[in-house]
Length: 361
Image 1 (cartoon, helix red, strand yellow):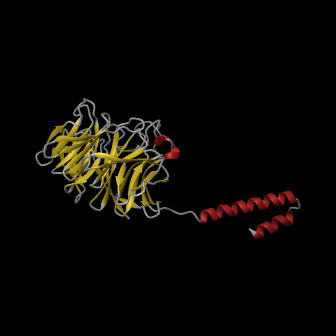
Image 2 (cartoon, rainbow, N blue to C red):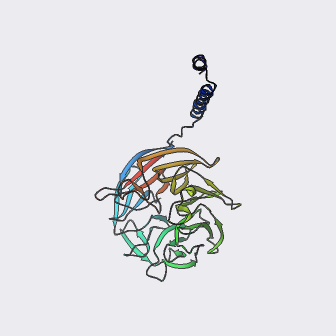
């Protein structure tokens, strides 16, 4: 730049032209410095298998298998040693399956069932367990703790406790957020349940011994996405649900709730997260906008340390259906067998959904 400056000054006598020239040169220098300090984020994980998985549905892990809900055909069983579908249980439709207490459980907020399905994978049979008195409870999420299955009703509203020995509801915990929305997401560490709803701005902690909500913590950026529980923190994806706060672009991110203090920290991860999971030494979030991505967060620093783009197509709520792949909104991501399992839905007629197995790097 010095030689260029000397040559310019010898040929230009105008002070104004010289000042403009210096300003342009300094702007170039600042741009070069910014580029030199740019940090390239590595992928953070790699796709090691892509398994056909019907149309749409959630994913869960347990009992030596990966379980995928396919709303077009039934419950799929994936063998993690071969990465292939080894079984299908017909007519089991609903949300993401959970495993424990001697069964596979599928919350089925569908017109066909409107109940919790208890599935016996060996016998290929299931029974329906009502989760409330109305014909429109719409159970959408479930978790298992020792001696209990907990189900969140999206339309009916409450969180209910089911005794797996009797297949009956034994406790009902009312849920009515600030805007009276129903439950959408649940997570557990075995001793507490954490609950969020699509139309609320708080996360509630439920004591499993007391069958009661013991505190509610405001999450200003919204709680429309998934939730998961770690040893010291609860992680919430903002997601989206118009016209609530989580819909707004400036609110997109992952919120970290400190379990001891209740303090909430928002982490901007460069897009709209619709699910989040704790595992394999990191926090993992799934973005559906502006691109389909898996994001890896370092919980020690609250920063993104990995970003794997799964589709270059820009995915937005206004995009025509079928223009880009979509992730399951209830439970898109599961952790197990040393891997991450991401459910990618089919968005076009005649195409299959996928289950991606991802290996952390």
